Image (cartoon, rainbow, N blue to C red):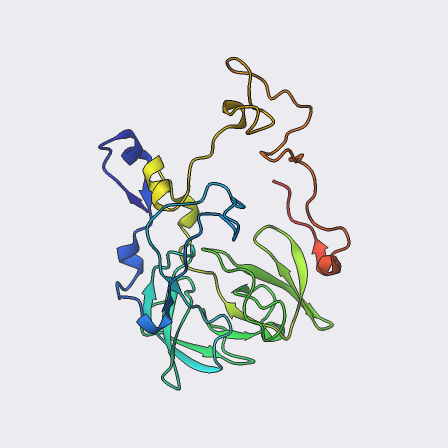
Length: 274
């Protein structure tokens, strides 16, 4: 972690990942870039559907190859991606095409990755879940075979293989949840990069604004028209029996997962309570 000189209170507590030591410093590959129009949390009608979004530095989206082509892949660069917490690696396939993939932890320029039904148990290789031994860490896991990785894609995350039986692999998620996943799906070996991401202290409001995050205002500081907690002279208790959000919905404690969701049967153990 990078710690700054304490030239101000916010500078004193701010920390950052030392990107120069972890990345190769190459420019993004132009043919793998697309621009995404920023909507500041608004829908097509212009109404806010996601609060606290807007502003921030301009970003260009990197197209990620979630499936990876079978064969060998040579790692050419390790780069920063403004749209995700993990680092990305640019790889060159055997047919000379290039793609961005999620960079595993400790991957370096010049490394060779293998993608096949069964590969050596090496960090970054991609293979079918049924061929990965119990106890190994995996990331970028497919939920439906052939659709590409859907889960375990954020910085420093990994799932642990607990069992392989009857067409399913049991995965222990970062949350502590244990669930069945079809063992014909592919997964990449190892933990994802940028494992120090959870230790970053933003330090000041301005840096949060650069990241595209707008302020969160307390409901009790608003007017009655704006929030169920609003109004009153001076500081007031919320005045409602149960906690509510800005739209008046009851929050806190209510389960949000559908009771009859078809994939409920695949969950062996629910996540750990915080």
